[in-house]
Structure formats: structure tokens, C-alpha cells
Amino acid sequence: MKRLAFLTVIIIGILLLWAESDLPRFGDPDTPSRTYVAGEYLERSLEDTGTENVVTAILAGYRGFDTLGELTVVFTGFVAVTLLIRRGGRL
Image (cartoon, rainbow, N blue to C red; front, side):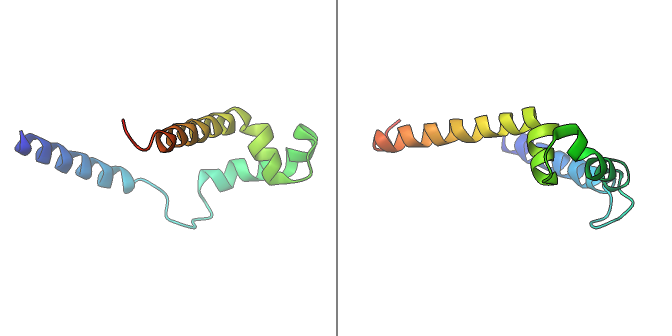
């Protein structure tokens, strides 16, 4: 059983290293996010969302549902930890 777990970890590690080699280099100005998306956000954020702050426009306007999902996960974790602390850490 330990050999199977070790083999699984090795295979997943190799797959992750292989997938990492396909990522763009750090700081590369020719990445798709900088080439296509960033310019659109900077140019159209005011007219699309009505907010002058580009960061707020992206988080609340363009990625609202994604941000709501992340907040839900963080809030659920907070409630779970609070309930565990109130019970004295007993499961």
C-alpha cells in the first residue's frame, strides 16, 4: 500500500513538473492576460461598470460571482473554526 502511494506521488509530481514547463515565464509581457485582457479592463472598466477604480471594477463587476464564491468559502471556514473553538476543539 505504501508503494502504491509513493508511486502515485511520484507520477503526480512528474505530471505537475511537465505542466509547469508549459506556463509562461514570470514577468513575460507577451502573456495572454497582458496582451488581450488587461488592456480591455483598463480601457472599458469605467463605461462597463461605472467605477473609476479599476481594481474594484474587476473584482466587483467583471469577477463578481467568482469573488462571491471565494468569500463564501472563507466565511464557511471562519464559521467552522469559530464553532470548533467554542466547543473546546472536541470533534
